[in-house]
Amino acid sequence: MSSIPRFARASLRFARAAAGVTLIVSVASLTAGAGAAAQPSPSHNGEGPHGTSVEVPLNTDRIQFVQLDDAHPEAPELWALMLPVSSFPDPYVMSDRSGPAAQRVLASLAGAPRGTVLTPHDCMVGAPDESVVVRTATAYDGASSLNFVLSKTDEPLAAVEDLLAECRFAKAVDTSGSVTDISTKLLPPPTVNGDDTLAYSRTVSRADIGASSTQLVLAAQIDDYRIMAIGAQYADGDPDSTLLHVLFMNAVERVRSATAG
Image 1 (cartoon, rainbow, N blue to C red):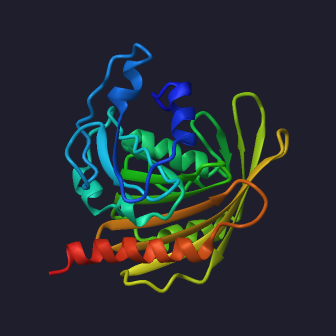
Image 2 (cartoon, rainbow, N blue to C red):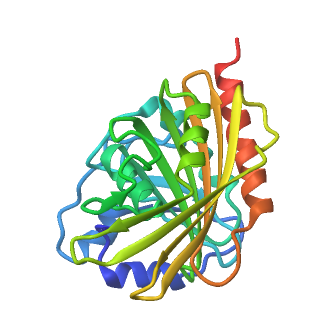
Image 3 (cartoon, rainbow, N blue to C red):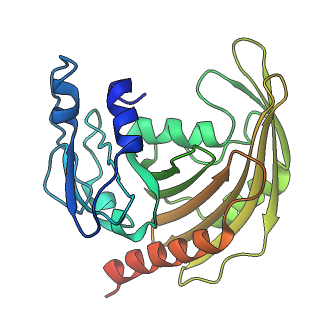
């Protein structure tokens, strides 16, 4: 959950900024008006100084807020390799998560958040103890999101591919008994400069409330770094595969350049 008051989030949503202006959005400045104590963040996302503020260049009708994770300041190495906020097109609201908070984001996208019982039980991609960071770009209308994941793991992508081949269909049951159906389909791997690559589609559907998401997942491995891009469409239609592929290629090249030599 965001620590920003509802009125502040609404103000952000409808704010307009002049072209070429650089805006600094601070958690402290937003929460002070609501009487909340500012919580300085020791996190570092590789684009600005440590703290709860980050400079974001703005275009017309664009505002971006970066919610840094002040509860889990680990993984500065991963944040330094993350695709920069400036790489994302208009108009998206940005949020960053690391550690357990990042794992919760990934579990929710996969349709099996904490507390659910997954069948088959071993069909969850990603170990809960991985060092992982997630940068999410969410459309203003909430209809779609772009999620970029960096983690360090010694698990080969081939093992993930084998798991997905055996887990094309799964069910997740939450504590209230609601059932989420999860289906995956392996796709041709993306053509990027990785040691190994993987692609698959995923559909997550919950019939009792009529909610569903269609997702495209791209992954690459470079040494022990894993780069993932997850495009999720929550309304009718499919994720923007062209945009996701372009950003994913840039994310992979960023890690490759940093690890070369």
